[in-house]
Image (cartoon, rainbow, N blue to C red; front, top):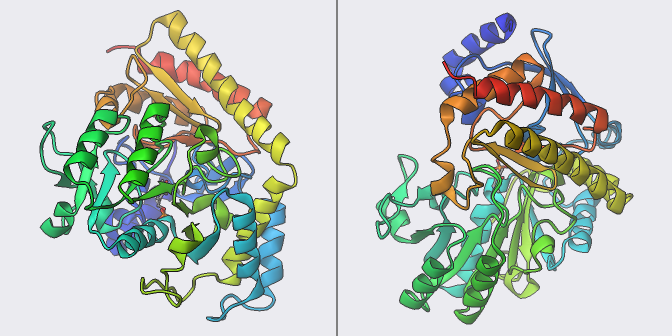
Length: 433
Ligand SMILES: *Cc1c(COP(=O)(O)O)cnc(C)c1O
């Protein structure tokens, strides 16, 4: 493949920004080889500056559920642009977005707008601590909640080992305030609540893991988490930045019938612009300034541009909710079932996790239940798989620890091409030597 122009731009980029990227995964460090530089997007397709055309299975990491450059979202942005981009004081668009969010998402009685998923999760965590007047937080190994200090903490290697920081610059104090447990492990949960009862401010998780590849929660894990947090008066935070409006209007909570106290949103609610939100029980949200003593603010929060894009993105779903999710989920399940049969017929050590429009191919013989399982995957085979797809014009997330996101623009015809390409890519990945 030719990446001449991309390489020239990335060479310039590397001089002025670390690794030439604004976010690390874009450097292709997990797959080796050249990253590309995007030029434009259209529906399910992404085009790079060298003229390569890809079926995009990343969709801006899930934000673009309507595909690239949807005309309705573009028009909504254009209309607002006429009157300005930010006012630094309330404008009607943000009220409208908050109304849409509280109307659509179960349990979201009040909501505060921010500018990213990271901000949403950091703020929800502060709220949990402020409302409970406790410090300890539980997170789950492999769950990603943005780059706030408290979230860059992982499990140590031994069973009973202390948490370890996943980034330089995270203080020991932060580690001490964080308990990291394996996902889907009820025993570890019960033991922790028993040992630290009355000290735990809250627990945060991705209900469906997406940032280590797709992993489903086991029902007994979620119900244990709900009852233990309730009993100990700790706050249960669902990070639905990825799953909100993707798995259903109410996100993943709706699939499993468990209600959290607080919910974090992002990605889809900005329609491709930077918007995040957190909210939930009104009695908790009333702790937020100016009503309460938990401080959180933002110069560009609720700006009319992001809100207009978000409103258009949500309205496109709401207008046709049932059909929308049926169609979207069908694209995902058809791809999975086809890959499953191919993998079975060839006897490959691979597995396909799929929940709605989130899909991951794992180079493990069985579906992983947690991050430790994910780490056993064959990274060499993943790289071959990734590049074989690229050569066929399919852009799969450039890391074995990510999920594919489909958009409503990924119709049956496009998914058929993806299926054919992934058969060949699987064959390539398992061709030894
Ligand atoms: C993307 C993501 C975040 C972080 O959102 P940003 O907008 O990148 O800051 C947080 N949590 C989850 C589950 C995510 O997928």
